[in-house]
Image (cartoon, rainbow, N blue to C red; front, top):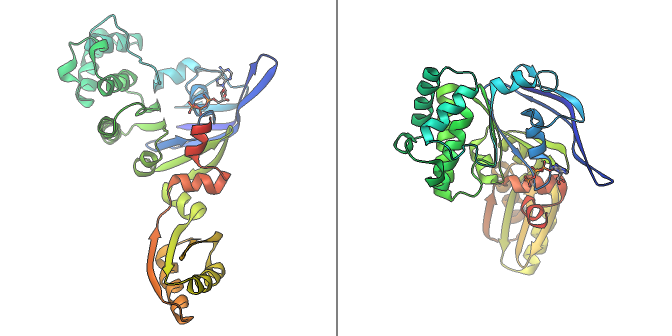
Length: 320
Ligand SMILES: Nc1ncnc2c1ncn2[C@@H]1O[C@H](COP(=O)(O)OP(=O)(O)OP(=O)(O)O)[C@@H](O)[C@H]1O
């Protein structure tokens, strides 16, 4: 559905050149739900804008929904939906009429557009709001209307730029419910950017991480977490001598990263906690040290980003 090779975008700002995207290779198969993650300024929107033909690449190639973004942008646009960060519905018409108008602009006849408008209104639970003006909708309702606008021509591929940003947790969950329903009912391929790591982790089957214009990780959240970040173990002993001993043993088994000691707590990272924790506890107890508490935690996608870049994604966001 998406095949990009060496996709690059360079902007000229005064006399300086900004390399927003530096040679991206990407293949997305039909039916996938891909979350595109990265800190502010990483190049997410620029990539999305190139894939949706809103911006020409500086170099490289991309075929999207079977059409080349440079030589056949109109072909790409007919086959994709794009839900940007700004409202896509205008203020001239009522909600349903906005949808019908959008359908007609995609070449549907008026009666096809009406039928399709009713389908997307139902899919996004907007039926009761069909006769309202878009400006009177709440933030979450408005975002659902934006998604409906992107779906009016039944595209096999939908791009969503930050679909849940700015919404409260309840509305975010509601948007996800609709996005997942869309995929279930129509098999739509979904490619979305998000700042919410937890959402990408739990909802997307594939996570692609971009940093400084380059893809630095690509896989399922589980793969990325176990291959790149590892599980965390924290073991507490009763005294400093015991902690020292436990830290020495930890240094021998820790597969990734260093061992840290904080008071009487020893922390380490291992590939798989369920195998490593019992073995570690056995070794510590055999050395004569009594363990007070032991805890294993799974990493987050932020730990993955930290392991790859030495920075936390959240900190990168805050300093950007
Ligand atoms: N039109 C433009 N002119 C100049 N520089 C640009 C332009 N658009 C983007 N950039 C720069 O390209 C880089 C990537 O920006 P982009 O908007 O793609 O990042 P992003 O990952 O989408 O960030 P955010 O999460 O903040 O939306 C940034 O350094 C940005 O300042």
